[in-house]
Image 1 (tube, rainbow, N blue to C red):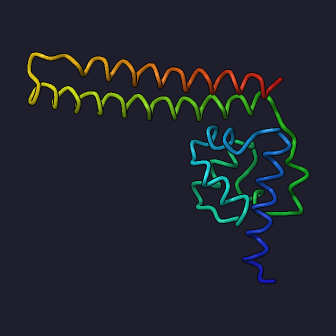
Image 2: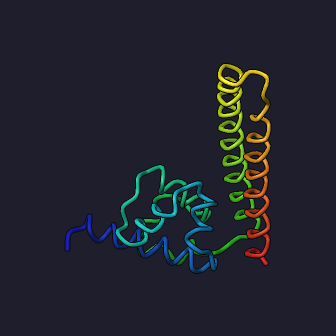
Length: 152
């Protein structure tokens, strides 16, 4: 077996092991890392991950990036620290919230411009913006509530 293929298998095994050790679903890990669930599935199945994906996973697991691809050092870095885990989670959620908020602001400006140009005198854009804003708040609140239960 080639060393590259072996490294991919070790990465896949380590990511899945760390995730299961914390009793996280793939969806929860994806949310913490601000990655797509499909990306987590691909990493756990094939071991294929970009450097950015590895960094996000290592940050979520609170381990150095190079440890993810090494079999012999996995056990020494496998402790789950609730404080560091919480910091990592809060950092990733803050990043996700900021990204969603920026998207909302840009899209709201676009919708406002479309409404002003094509439907002057009608104020339907405020409903659309309010619904999207509430959806973002619900998603973020759900993430914090789920994370609180996972730490207990």
